[in-house]
Image 1 (cartoon, rainbow, N blue to C red):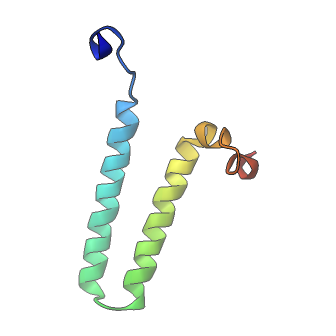
Image 2 (image 1 turned 120 degrees about the vertical axis):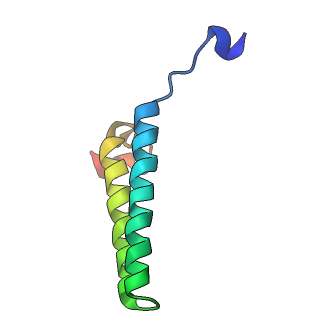
Length: 76
């Protein structure tokens, strides 16, 4: 039976978008790292890209995060 009769409706478009954005962030960081090896710019760029990615996911998944007991307090 399983998925043959009871399909799980995965959000494929969201998952693909998350992967594409993560790869895009990786490529940007790769070029920043090539331009500024072993410097604070490298770490700042990585931190900024991670925060932007996290905020994007938080914005898209706001309803799901709002249902969590601890995180939901900060999103209402």
